[in-house]
Amino acid sequence: MPNAFQTHLGEFHTTRWSIVIGARGQSSADVNASVDSLYRQYLSPLYAYVRRRGYSSHDAQDLTHEFFSRMLEKGWLTSAQPERGRLRTFLLVTLKRFLANEWHRISAEKRGGSSRLVSLQSEEGERLFLADASASSALPDELLFDRNWAMVLMQSTLDHLRHEYARSSRPNDFEVLKSCLTAERGSIDYAMIARELELLPVSARSVVHRFRKRFREIFREEVAGTVAAPDEVDAEMQALILTLGQR
Image 1 (cartoon, helix red, strand yellow):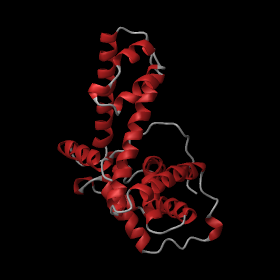
Image 2: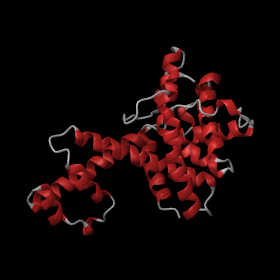
Image 3: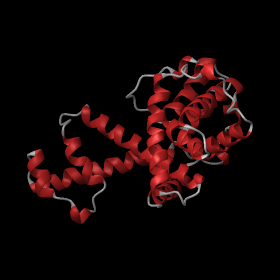
């Protein structure tokens, strides 16, 4: 298995179109790094999509792992053209072609050779699949993929923000403030936050405002990395946020 798949967990990575195609004409190590960046961040929604196509968890794990292996071996990145659309569209279309070409006939001896990362990411993908099955069985697979993609970007944003706080002078503030991200403005208990953070209420409001603002900035950066041009970012953000509300 390519060394690119033997990765360190817990690192924050932003996958951008420039990373995806940036290795063209470069060394195999650069190509591996491009695929590795995709593999880390987007294996879970792809795995969940394969599961919804009727494959078992073991087969879906093998398929998604093999999909990225073939992307390396066959040079599929050379067909990735950011000016033609979104990164999520490219990956899903390429995965569909992969499944249609019957790459699912993977020998049993290959199973077990995947890295620790694929197992952990498949666990997350399985959670996405089970959540889709229980709450959204009426939605098309493609829409569920988009929603899971949005969830991955949201989680990456949250992880990035957590990492920033861990390196700050007030690392424990993150756990207190993260609930503010999903709360309506009128429902935030600023008095409680002030007590927890040992601040004045007026200061707590400022801290919450900066926290939410920073989350939006990071999310925008994440989304910007998956579209072709800056003028597409707002539309993609809106589309992904809308998919999160689909039931």
